[in-house]
Length: 334
Image 1 (tube, rainbow, N blue to C red):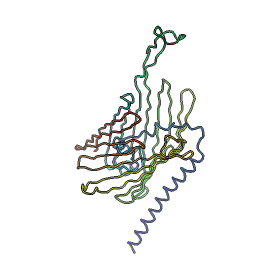
Image 2: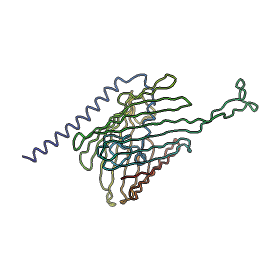
Image 3: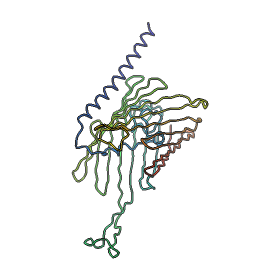
Image 4: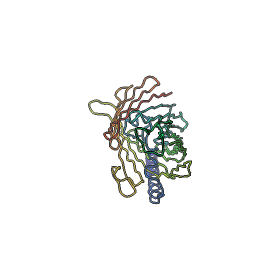
């Protein structure tokens, strides 16, 4: 009788967890059906750039990644499982070093709390003028650089989580952004909702409801931008590779956007579009992990080296349309 009761409680818990995820999905669909028509297409791209070097190497997956230091960005619900103090500092330079991408992440031990701070910038942009502004450029009227400016976005994600039961947790990640673009300032705020469900030790599911109340940007000149909500769904499976007998984790992720993106999306239908992400992690040795991934239309790879409490991470993204990307980071786990 006791065993039957335990099975019943487990099934009841599973039904409640699936029901919560279903309600989140339904809420997303209902909100997306009444989208703010003034929302700007691609206005939310700054919030979708990603975080965590291992997650870049894994094709920008991370909703079910218990080892990511950027839980506050990917899925705040994962913070409920944080058993140590985890930090990471990342640096990247894309497009021949013109775009700087710096991220600092921290997850606090047993607090259900995490933080991700990002800076995305193009520094030392030259502003030019003509000696004689009333005449066209010529050999006698050549443009000259009279000053340099920095264009940068600063983002802060504050992740918080709550355990619902042994298998299911929810999270909230408020986010703030400060923008300095061509000497004009702007600020914005929004929030993401996260959900995490562990079916067993090998199968996990995650969801992130991005910008669920329309993230807003306010500019110094009085103009505003709205960011449409989006939904990310992910599952991961832990297994062992045949022959090599190494622990391997597969991640599969679908990114659902509601900005009316058509040609630039993998799949599109009306206001909705879907892009795919996938990743594979192989534990080669106790100190080395190898990564590979697929990020929409790019191939990614990377590795992590663990030495005592330190992690050294590298990721590479091959993009045939734009410049290849290299990212490095160092982390500490205590």
